[in-house]
Image 1 (tube, rainbow, N blue to C red):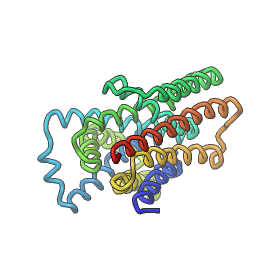
Image 2: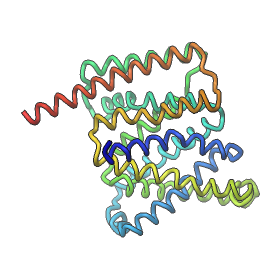
Image 3: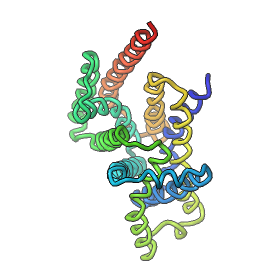
Image 4: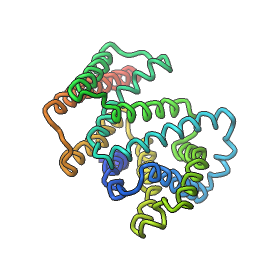
Length: 294
């Protein structure tokens, strides 16, 4: 196994197990956890840029259009983080995993709508199956699985913004966190001043875990950046399912969240859609590669 695959597997695995980390902070309000994730991620990412002597390059690249793109991306990412933390600490890890299973298919639809990308004939089938799976789950629950859809939509739109974003992953995430830093910092100062903040007030372990939110954000990102340069896109497409698979197994087997027959049928429909989607993607990539070397 080459280093690129190892880095990528490490990144997706760490993202998969992140639910366990946030469970240790379940007594802290989700908005505070998300805010600390922004603050400490920004501090750590800025330190990394300083060590690599790249901070001046980031500053020089800032333009009004760049700021607007990364402001929207930062807000979407913060919302995604907030919803996911709430889902984990409210007993919805399985439903959260569904959002990330749906995300690749939703991204295809967003590309169709906003970037005028064309779907290959076989791609319509998994998109339709995923929609059918969501409808089935909605009918069986008696309610729309809004956690799954909100996670898929915020992350899908975030990915859409990153498609038109001009900066690399490390520079981009640093700028995103910088742009959403002021409001979350004000929020943390307000709740801390009135005695409702967990930081420095809920014990040493909680304080260290809140600081560690920056580490659990930055480390997988760095592994992902290292892996993405070395791994073919088709392989990345398959490896991305490591994250929701670990999340799903964590929710069912570690936290014993309910997974009845109705849920199993709905998930099975969506998993079938992902299998068709992945096989079509691999076949298309190999055919394109064969044509390019012919």
